[in-house]
Amino acid sequence: MPARSEGTTVPGDDEYAELPGTSLTRLPRAAVLAAQGARLPVGLLGDYLPALVSAAETGRRLTTAELDRFRELGRAAAEAGASLRALVDLYLSATWRAWPSLPAAGGEELDAAGRTRAAAAAVLRASDDAVAAVCEGYDAARVARARAEEALRRELVDDLLTGTSTDPGVVLERAAAFGLRLEAPHVVLVTAGERRFVDGRGTARAVDAGLRSTCATEPLVAVKEGLLVCVVPQETDDPDAPVGGLPRQVASRPLGFTPLPAGMSHAALGASRALAVLTGALSAKSGPPGWRVGVSRPRTGVTGVRIGFGEAASAVDLAGRLGLLGQPTHTDDLLIYKVLLRDREPLAELVETVLGPLRAARGGAGPLLDTLDAYFATGAVALAAARRLHLSVRALTYRLARIHQLTRHDPTSPTDRYVLQTALLGARLLRWDQPGP
Image (cartoon, one colour):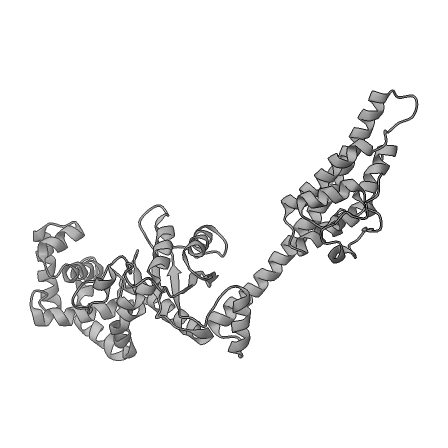
């Protein structure tokens, strides 16, 4: 075969001079042109063309040692960042370019057509074996790298969410390697579903892809103890851009002036786009929504992420106790409930004293507690509460009278209503009405 001319340039020869099975002293023109077309170093071919010549002359298969060298070349290509498509193109292009100059197989007993067919079969078989070995080595290197990166990512997630590392500076550097810029404010979203989430599966994968296409900088999506955790950058919208579904001039008004969307507080508006992606992926599931999303305050740094995770996880837990399903819940929206839980003993005493007599009702306390819940949620409007419970107004009125009779607190009286509502919230927070294990 013709050797490479002195004026021929080969991309990346120096970088791949030590590749297994590589000799750069004399390169066939077919190899040089194939490397230029694939935009890869010619050294990634190794001794591929000499192997084709040998196969064409003798009709032999590639040896185990030759296949091992091609696997090493595939691994080297993966570690160097070459694409698999370009790598396969390199080998196939070198094959057809070298074909016209390959010798014919067989002896004098075969005619010209027979020798050509034999050579073609041998060369194509050798090419198939070599490309398969290169791809096998490439995939092995890619899998090994993915496993190593996943182990590092899992370690980073543990350090961020649980504080296992004692050096925040090291964690910041490792986070930057994954594209996380924690020096800027970030919001933590924690989601609990009817079933435990699995990292890299279904909803987690859809949320990760959606956030990557939405967030200005890299987000972090991971699963921790069955919870889906999203660490997303705080948005910096244009001055006149909508915020959380509201015009900015409306969203900037005092809290009491304009009502916010359900489950959304002004402190959470910075994560509105991320929430839209997250809730959209969760709502794509069939059936009624059984998920809960907790939203932290925006914070900076490694410690801020850890605190935010605690806030959002606590919001998810409280949302479950209060039955707040299918909507985001910001940690600031639950401050009153946290205050109630700080004094658990007096709260438990209030619940037992006020609501304990409801256990004597036929069917237990559950239906009457649901009646109070619907009655208070609808602003003490009997007709609306009855519709919510799928009862007649007469049946609802009977239940309210029964509650008055058992507890000696009238739900229709403003003073008694406050006592009953506080006790009801305490019962939900303490899971008082649920049977023990």
